[in-house]
Image 1 (spheres, rainbow, N blue to C red):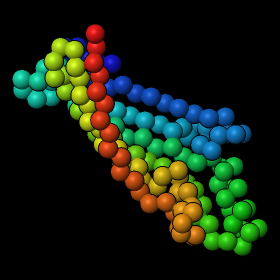
Image 2 (cartoon, rainbow, N blue to C red; image 1 turned 90 degrees about the vertical axis):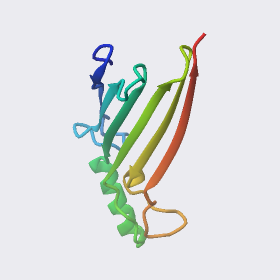
Image 3 (cartoon, helix red, strand yellow; image 1 turned 180 degrees about the vertical axis):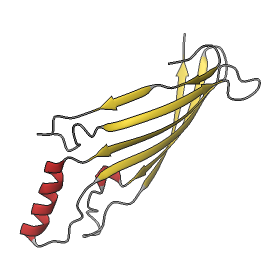
Image 4 (cartoon, rainbow, N blue to C red; image 1 turned 120 degrees about the vertical axis):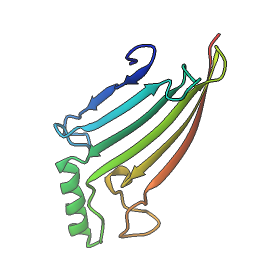
Length: 138
């Protein structure tokens, strides 16, 4: 959602689940916010720089299941809580018909703190993801 030919744009997204089957908390949504700026650099009027942050809270039912599973199996399982992510992207218009967009995402507490199947009692570690998107319009 652009504010005009130049300047900041602030798309926002909000998501929620029903709490019965969703592992994420309804009412405490997996909320996301993103700020974008078009022509962030001199001479690059069609380029877009964006930064975003998101959080997904694990539902109370999923947390209770984790606690019950740990108690009844006698294992030291981590209890899930929330997942956070940070994203940075830059969409460069290389020609009038070709855009290239590198993207960096960093996930903190993936899956809300899922147990690591290769290391019992430990959570899956934070993760960095790099991506590259190419768009060609005819």
